[in-house]
Amino acid sequence: PQMRTYLRDVTDHVTTSSQQIEYGKELLTGLQLSMNARAAVSLASEQVRSDTIVKNLTVAMCISLPMSLLPALFGMNINVPFQSNPATGAVGGKIVFFWWECAIIGACFLMAGMWMTVPSRRPTQGRRS
Image: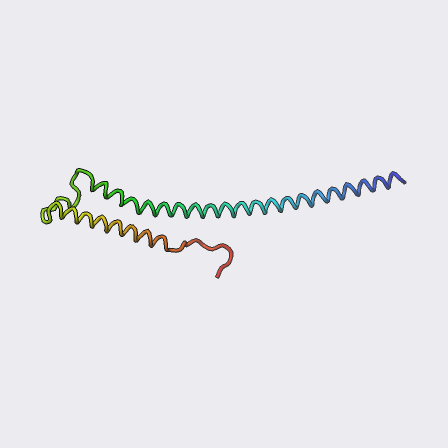
């Protein structure tokens, strides 16, 4: 009789320990899912930040490209458009070319400013109106 009581106690302890292990396993599975979801959200926010940086660098490049390309072309020892215009002479042609360059750079600034003020067209997560 004592042996039966002892074996019942051992069986009860084994059953209780098995249930506790199953509960711990479920808890760890839930924690793992929560950690994966948090990592995904963190990765998504980093991606948005990276996209914003790339957008700003693209705008800066679009602004600086005409400002560096046109003076480089103008500084070369070759004939450029409007430089040797017989109607206005060499000096007048350079002034016309200068104003064309200013107009192109101004247009680039205008387009970049418009692009920066347009809101992002990404779909919102969660609520729908």
